[in-house]
Length: 84
Image (cartoon, rainbow, N blue to C red; front, side, top):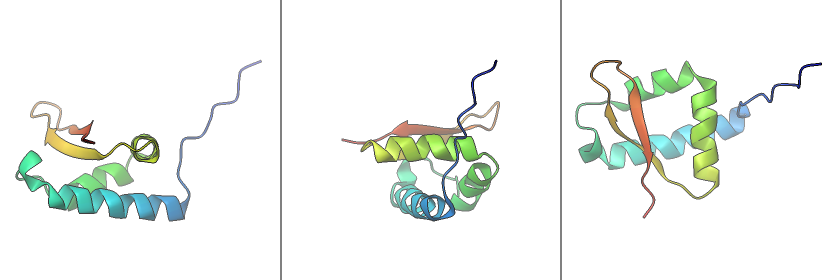
């Protein structure tokens, strides 16, 4: 018998709150990722709820995830915990 897979998704309310926090942080720290717009970042998160869930877990545990760049080869957006 297979173990049940835990669904890694946020509620709509959690999702909107987290996106607001991330948007504010991304826009505040543009020097970390010059040329990368929030709309592009949000579109990637909208397409992958598990990544958004992971960022939510980082935020929940007092981390401060922020975009630090984009891989030129894969176009993957790079997130790092930027808490002091």
